[in-house]
Length: 157
Image (cartoon, one colour):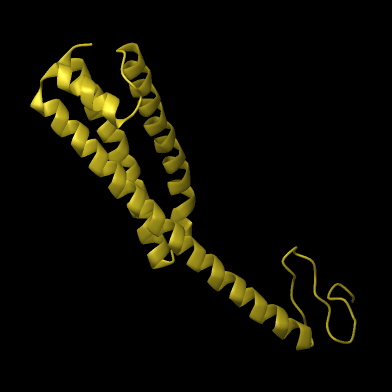
């Protein structure tokens, strides 16, 4: 592999990571805003970008092995040193930074999802307790009608 091809591959991998980072940042903002309608399309895009990032990483590991290097950061550093191109090292460093930034955004998204789920569970618990004491009633987590305290089901006429 030539230095130009290596640079093109690193740039493509960086672009894939940047797209994933952008999607996660948008997902984070949708969660902060409480805009659940924006999440479904982002989920599909996120899965697509995760696959692209994975494909790039798998190809890089394969290339490292073919070049006789270990499939890790040390192997990549040794391989890049053989090219002697400072731009390659700079792009590899950028890729590592972007990966860390993306992982940080992903962790924040996970925290936000947990917070939203906790708030939703708490609201459901309040509703369930209110339904148990109310004349009307609501639905349980399985979608089944919760009857009124008199025992009369919601579906009775």
